[in-house]
Length: 116
Image 1 (cartoon, rainbow, N blue to C red):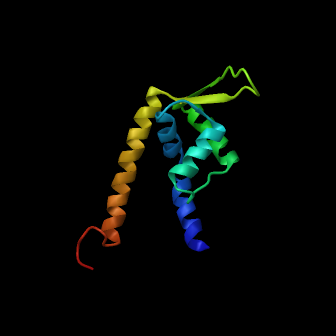
Image 2 (cartoon, rainbow, N blue to C red):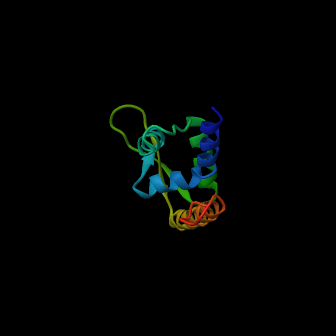
Image 3 (cartoon, one colour):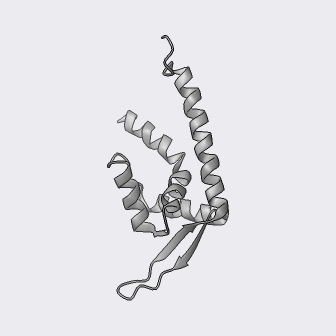
């Protein structure tokens, strides 16, 4: 369905900010991040694992996220991710960009309360 593809494209364009937002609530590992994104979107968007790890690697390279190994007593060790101060700054900037773009699109699509 083309509409769902367009929605997914818009979300993918903002996935780094979405991941930073999830991590701003606390350190997390891959599966938890995926689960949080699916739950928060009420099932409307489910990120794929390869996309998540590609984004995490990019965010880590930019200094917005750092990773560390957990010390699980049961099961496999998990790699956790935390947002850095630079990541928090980037998240705030990304939110500002999104709000600005949304306002422009709302005006262009005459969704700002004005006449059609």
